[in-house]
Image (cartoon, rainbow, N blue to C red; front, top):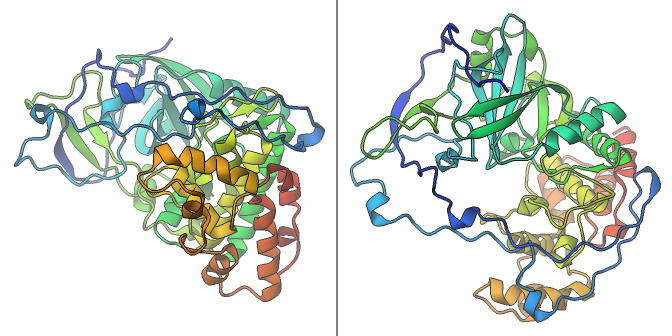
Length: 479
C-alpha cells in the first residue's frame, strides 16, 4: 500500500483565488448517524432467463406484495436527518462564505472520504491541480502526472467502498473496446486517516451533461445527434459484454475537451477557472482534524465554458452501480429522475432499465431539460412527472402504486388522486419536445419522438434494445 502524500514536492502555483474561512463541525470518528445505515432491501429478484447478444427477454410481472411488506421496498426515500442539537449549530454572527459545488464535509470520518489538498501528490506521481467532481461515495480530482505531459482523473472512493468498479472496468477492457467507456489507466491504494482507499486513474474528461444543462445551454443539433448515438452505442457495447451500467445519469456522461492534454496549467485555469477554496475550521476555531482536508475545494464550474471546445467524443463514467446481467442486484441507487418505473413494482434491474435511463439522457441532450425532474429527489415525484409526460401507468401497476403511496404521502392515496388527468398537470412528451426544439420539421420531430417513445415505454419488454437505439433512423438519416 502506498501513502496518499509525497514529501519534498514543489508547491502548486495557482492563479489568485478567494480563500475564506468556513466554520463547520466535523463529527468524531466514532459517530455513526442512523441515516447512514443501509437502506431496507426490496423483495428478492425474480429468476432471469439468459438471452444472447444483449437482447432483453420479457420480464414476468412480480406477484403483488403483502400489505405488511409494501413499505419495505427500496424505492422508499431516505430519512431526512434531524437538525443538529442547538449547541452544535453554527453560532449567530458567523459568516459562511458562498462556496458552491462542495461535498458534505461530514463524510470525512473513519470509513469515509479521504482528505485531499490542492498541490498534494497522490500515489507518488499524480499532482492534484483541481477538483472534477464529488458525490456521497467518492471525490474525483484533476491531476498532472509528474514528469509527463497531460492530465488524468483520479477517483478516490470512500474507505468502506468495495472494489467492484475496478473489477467491472478491468473486465470491460478485456472484452470490450469502445472509446466512450472510461479507460482505466492505473489503480493504487492510499492508507489515510479514514482507512484504505482503492483509487482509480482514468483519462481526464470534460463537462458533465448535467453541468451543461443546468445552465440552460442548448447544444447544436449537429453536435447532439452524433453524441447521443455514441452514448447509445456505448451502452450497447456494455450490454453485449454482459454488463448493465445501473447508474446512467447526466452526472455520469461527459463531453471530452479537445486539446486538453496539450494545455499548460495556465491555459487550463484560463478555460476552466482557478480553484476556489475555503479553510475548514472547527467551531472552537481550531484547524480541521487530520481526518478532513485543510480546505474545502469547489468543483469546476462550467457555467461559462465555451462549448466550442468540445471534441465531439462522449464518454460514460462511474461504474460503481454496474453489475453482471447474470446476477442483477435486488435494487439500485440510481437517481430518481433516471429510475426505471418498473423497479418500483418489484421488477429487478435489467438491460431494459438501462435503456429507460438512456432514453431520459437522449431527451435531456436534445432539449436541455430533465425528462422527469424530481426537485425533492424522490422516485414518487419522478413517477408523477413521468405520468404527466407519458400518460397512465399500466392498469396492473395502478392499484399497487396506490397501496404504496398511502404511507409515503400526506395526501390521498386513492387511485383518482394519482391518475386523474384533471388533477395531474399534463406535460405530454410530444409538446415538450416540440416546444424545446421548434426548429425541427414535422418529419424530424416524428423521428425523434419515435426514438424517445421506443426507449421510454412503461413495459420493459416493449423498449428498444440499446443496439437498436444506436441504429435508429433519427441517427442514420440525413437531416
